[in-house]
Length: 274
Image 1: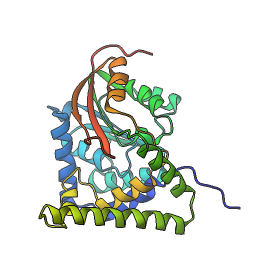
Image 2: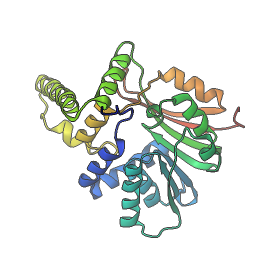
Image 3: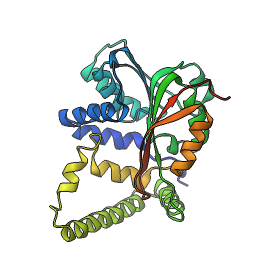
Image 4: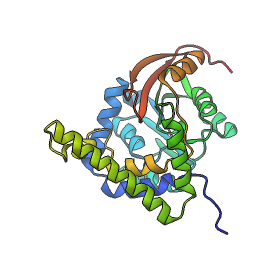
């Protein structure tokens, strides 16, 4: 009997993404970090990439001049990041890559602290989001920043998405294909209708996606359909948690109440509560 999967193959999706990675996507990733974090003097900063995935944002931070430490619990994601390091910064002592999990307290406790901690779209896929956030908080230096993206909680819809993602990871290749195909058809149709009503070019939304963090529409769709474990929180819940940990909010970008990620930059101002 085939054993059921319990986790989406994030690394496989990132390996596929690297095939479309180009200089423009890398440039956009660098710009997105600069725009959202508003950091001055990257050459003096240390940058921790939690759940480094494709390695794109570790690469972006290194190109901006920061000393980078990347980790992920997915071996294929580590392979992606090592590929980018070997391509752009071979043998670089200021970019460290290792296997590890943000929910592993013994692993996290030996990492030290960093000027910038980056956890975009990661902590809600751990299966224990609030523990992951608590451990991530300890990795931020006093006056340091953490850049988070957490799925927005929606009544009813969040439960539905969690159920669908669980079905996806437990399905055969045919079941996964059908779930993904139905979602893609729905998204394309919805987008086409909206573009026609607003007299917009129907392909513009897909070209523009490349200009948002250097990402890819197709790989985002795959991640959205299959990304399990899956948790979500309201912006208020995230704000209350981090303020309780001794952080203040520096920047917020919400997804307007829909399905997607709310983005936060918090700054540590005081000793963390244990």
